[in-house]
Picture 1 (tube, rainbow, N blue to C red):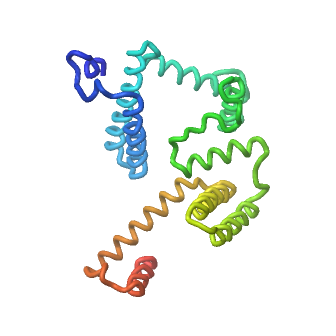
Picture 2: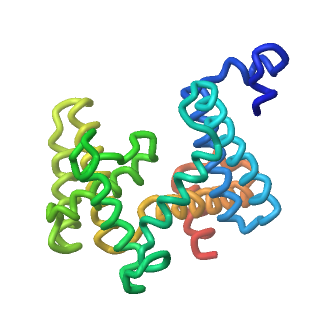
Picture 3: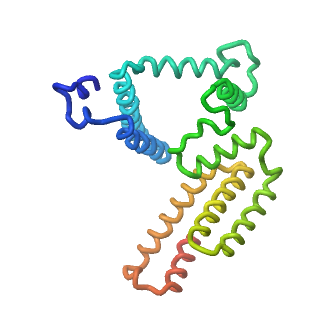
Length: 238
C-alpha cells in the first residue's frame, strides 16, 4: 500500500483517495464478507476477508502519511481493547457475564469520554437503518427507557399505523412510516429477534418465491394480478 500511495511512482487512483472516498468500499467489502458467511462459501470468505483487510491497511496507510497512526497501532489498540473488556479471561474476574460484561465495560469507557456523555454516543450513523435503530434502542434501554414487555411494543405498531392513515401530507406520512419501522424494530428486539437478520431472510424468501413464479409462466408479466397471486400461493405451498 505504501508503494501504491507513493506520490512519484504509485497508482494515480490510489494516490488520490481519502478516508471519505474509501469508506464506501470498506462498507461494501464488509457486506461481501457477510454474504460469504451466509452462503457458507469458505473459499469466497477467504478472498473477501482479504479484500476487507486491504481496506484496513488502506485507511491505516493514509493515517500513517499524516503521522496519526500506523497499521501496527491499529492491531495494538484492538488487542488492548480485547484484553480490557475480557477481565474474566485475561484478569482475575469470575468467568461469568459474557457479552453483558463486555457491554458494561464499554458503557463505562463511554462515560469516561468527555467528547459525548450521552448513552447514545458512538452509534455510527453509517450503519444500516434497522441495525442502528436496534442499537439506539438497546442503549436507551440500559438507562431504563424501554417498553416493559413485547406486548406494549406491539401496541405501538398499531398506533403508528393509525397515525400513518391520519397523516395529512406526504411529509407527515414519511415521518409516520419511519416511526412505524422504528416501532417494528422495537417489537423484534423485545421478542429477541435481530431485525436486520429477519429482514434479510424475508428478502431472500421473497426473491426465491418471485423467481419461482417467473419460472412457472413465460408470460408472467402479462398475467393479471389475480393470476399472479394464484402463482404466489402455489410456490408458497412448495
